[in-house]
Image 1 (cartoon, rainbow, N blue to C red):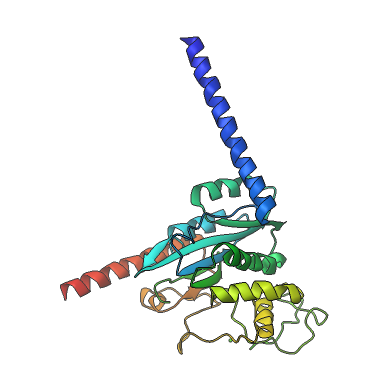
Image 2 (image 1 turned 45 degrees about the horizontal axis):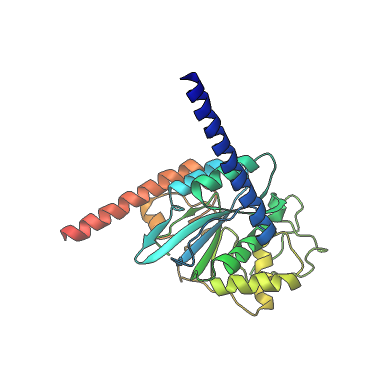
Length: 284
């Protein structure tokens, strides 16, 4: 009996080794072929999404990613429109195993081999556009946002450069010598059609990188002669934190500076309101 037990354990060990080897080989080959460390199986060719939400995330923000997965970032269908969410990350040796595990479990990580840092946000967003262009061009729209954002998926700006060196949005005159930025949408959340993602990614080869990704995207759009437009006459995209109330959040798209817990609480309240609306209209 002990011999059989050891034999079974040996077979299981060999099986697990082969499985791990095939997985690592798959990841390595995928990177060699596609230039990505991690990509999700999006099923874009089978079931094209109406909206792809790309969320820039730091490698250590696993709690924020988890909160988003449980709330507004969970794959859903509204009407007949499929909405999917993916996280954009650079590389960090310290967190790579965790990201591999997340990718296997949730199938929502897009990653290339560049250092994950705040000043690589431009590279990160361009990576997202490259992914849409190459792997999901059939998507109708793309939205870019951040991990500290509340996004109300059911309700679906000309500024001077900041010269204060203490600001994280600081841009020196050597980096950007002009007095004004082109019209742009704040990096906390903006939506563009998938064909624009392709055009921006292509024209980015001709435009020098700029560390503020929302401004950089605006520079690429200006080169393409594409002008951002407001979706509503009433403000719905907030780049600052909005004090929560169910009625107020029901009529906005984004609120900035939300903690993982605040995102979860706000989302639950929104879902409860949505259920009450359905019950009310069924009764009446």
